[in-house]
Image (cartoon, rainbow, N blue to C red; front, top):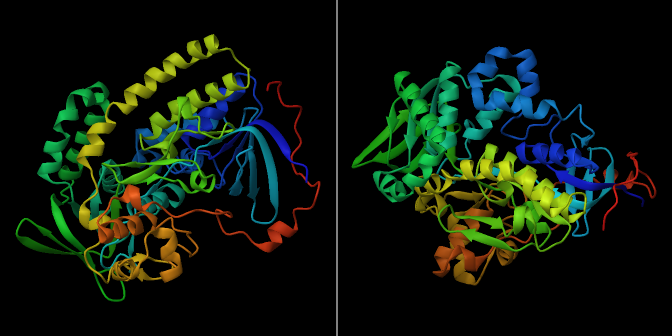
Length: 478
């Protein structure tokens, strides 16, 4: 089968992907962006163009950082970038071949270089009752606000930790939602542990100012804030009816019809694992991230990674990293000289350094609690697809399952529709604790294509020699 060819294929149209596309086109590369969403922006700037044009009030509710994304995505349509919106990538090969589908027909795209800008996903929060109707991640509630202007009715309990927890609480307050409680797992000890990183974080004081301002607005709205909680449970039988948790020596029960859970975000590593790239373990934040070299390069010469998929740093850092990676790709293709790279990269490197300055503080302050990483209650569901509990995993470990991939044979955990996205980190943590070793030693699921469900009809319609893409000759280079 013939494939459309580009100098650079970018997977993902979030801040890293869009910024990289702009930078690559500006230095003369032919660029294709493949993205699952119908409009550019990724999760952070989801639907920002439509919100800006049709729902100006919601743009104010979602805040200045969200509004910033409009300027970033607006130029993508007018550029020379080929944008495949609504296309799911289901396989990537080390030689730069990308396989995707629009839901009806699969296609093949060839890149001399491929940049993965797959971003982050929310960490699963497996607590008793987290599978009940009425429970969702805080990020999912934010998606509803962005895509449809929807706000949960009735009292809302927001539980967990991390900067996004404050942001979403602030946005819900602006939208007029009824927040019954903001319950944080962050403790005083977490603040003490983070204190040594404060001096460096002052270089990005604007982030600290935003956090303090959000907390002031949430308090001014009369929201009950409880910190240092533990033993979190969602209360209810047929649906969520509230939350229960301990704070100090006291147990609290808060009624709520909607429960939003959040414990930070982690890199989306499905594609990088499918490529069999080396991954490292982040000891503080307890997540896997792909090992990268200079500006996103990897052990596979044609594959680069930028943005939160390479390690969590936030949207503005992802934008700067995307531009730096695009310039590095251009340099590797001899489209620009190394001297020209240094000149163009300098302001973006400075921008990246600024946004990364606050990260060590946040990583230390918002560490996921042990009871979230390794649920103590044996009946807590870990793998939602196959309804596998924490107790099931511990029993399988006792019977000899050494790691996540062997666990599939025991319990089918990780073999459902999500292919381990929701349970992978928790399975690793539970097995590590059961075997008395580290998560880094236990390892992670081995990911195979297709990365997302794919129908036989989509494959059957991909005829030999068929291509929906027409493009001029790629630029010269090795």
